[in-house]
Length: 417
View 1 (tube, helix red, strand yellow):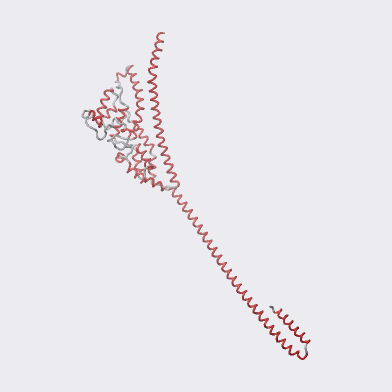
View 2 (cartoon, one colour):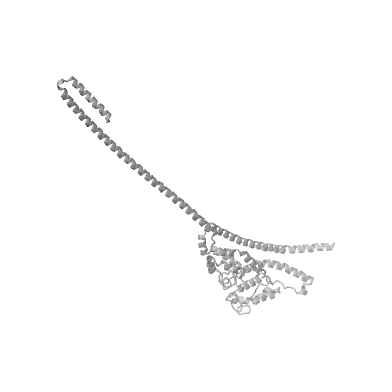
């Protein structure tokens, strides 16, 4: 209670006391006034004490609340600063992490873009495939009669590079050559004769088996060879001589060719030989593709720098390739395909490729497939040429006698007019 209210209360009590005193007996007024005044004073003191106690309690409570609110505000401010610091630190960490990630990404991208794989040398070797193919084509040109291709076997060289002789003489010569290649079947029939003194242990039947052209002459049951040695090349060429280029008539001498009949004979022989050239071409090309090619020598040295290519070469290269350092065109193509498809070392390299390097490797494989498909296209064209010649030959067989008979009929009628 405020001081003003206390004063009003005291005044009211005092007035009441005075009124009571005016109505009382005059003899007792002094006593009542003293007691009343004392009582009012005591009440005033009690009320004032109570009010002061309440005020102190309220002030104490207000002070406590103020301190509490101050502490709460201080805690809130401190926590806010901590949260702000945490958010700022987290944002800084995120920014640093993003910068680091971007830096690593750019470094990896640069590494992949400019990384030179260990197989680059073997890829460079692939670029020489056209040169190797051209070398094989040139080698085939030397296999025509008198073409100058190397032949180590003298008996075979005579059969290949001399003009056509009479069929009976040609067959006798073929029998003498075959004595080197007598097999078990021949020996069972006429073994011990000049035509078969013994069974060949290295190349039985080489001059009469197509295997000599397809996979290389050799002992029975041997694995196919992609690169032939010189003895295998000679045997394969003798097979072509027996199967395709055998003589059907002797070549004329100079005096005989100058006659009218001789001129017709030479022309007919040329027409025949043009067909035989086409017939022998696939076999001769196969043999040329199986010869060691000098064009592969430097390319192989470069390719074998690659660990994956070198591992495949050591395991699968032919003995001729390892001894001469040269592969045939056939083996080189098989090497290019096999070192990818059938080579675990290459598979390991492939697993390590990514990004642009992997895309480049996919392009290289597609290019290799295109190259092989081009070879298939060339072979189909050769086959079509030969098929056309066979069709022409069949047409000649059918129409020559008909046209000959009709021509004689027409000529007789004209002569009779």
